[in-house]
Length: 199
Image (tube, rainbow, N blue to C red):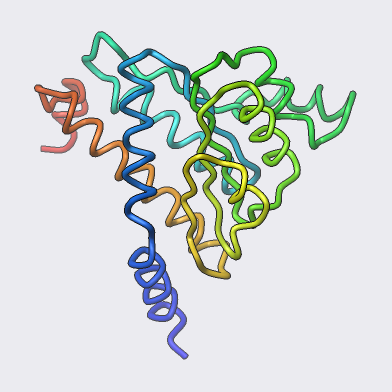
């Protein structure tokens, strides 16, 4: 078996199965958040946490560069000291919900990422968000897990392969970013040194 070709074929097939209506709904939630200056919170564990961090960085800089109304996107798993303190003094399942208690306002957007869909700390945070008038997005894989039933928008990579799930989630964030930039940026420059680097 050609492992490389099999992986790429699986990735392509999973991308082809994505629900475009759910992606469109995610795009509209980001447009709403920017327009109304709502906060966007994202979080996950392991690779999903890295995806959350990457996406937040893209919207803080790339999608916001040059705008007066910027994206107010925060990755909750970027604050390692707070997560460790919460986990050490309470329980690992509380690390995201406790941070949301500090920051969340009604109408904010909360994005929980879990490959399995069953990470307890992501479940609890999405439940808290739902109970406090936030708009929610679940990004999951495999069978969808519990978070698929908790969110207003569900980005479901329907494949039993964690690496492919993670690739798909990042691709969806990039699609959303591209849409926001197309809507909001009259100038295409991302900064003078960036522009020089890519020439």
